[in-house]
Amino acid sequence: MSKKNITLRMKADYEYESVNATGNTVNIDMYNGPEKMHQSPMELLLSGLAGCSAVDAVLMMKKKRRKIEDFKIEAEGIRNEGIPAYYKSIHLKFVLTSPDASLEEFDKVVKLAVEKYCSVASSLKSEITYSTMVVRSA
Image 1 (cartoon, rainbow, N blue to C red):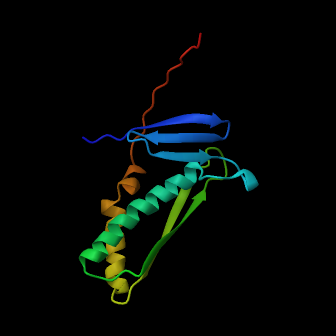
Image 2: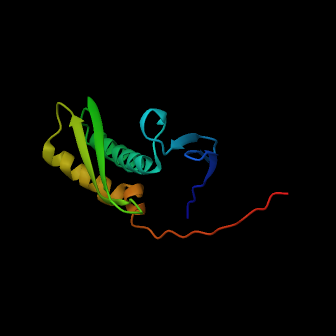
Image 3: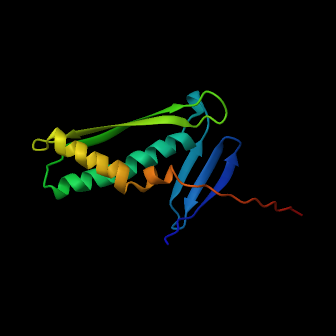
């Protein structure tokens, strides 16, 4: 079994920093408007899903020896109006610019990428457990 770990620390009420085991850092904020400098946790979830799907789709198209001039995913999440404001649905629009790829083969590759190979998509179906701890300062 493979494990991944991050440590998240509060920088301010609406600002956090997440650091992985190798020291890579992601800044997170929940601001709106001009104070917004980083992605929110829900935007990061969309970014993770799109990034994971992208890698698999691109590698499969390259394995088919297709030329990729440009590739992007536009991710849209529709959130619940109440609390918690979870994603009720997520739509990923895959856009491939290629002189030699067909829509049919790209559709098949995307389906495999999202439904079979993307760890993030599969993780959205996972059980989440948690524990708590209070450390009292002196």
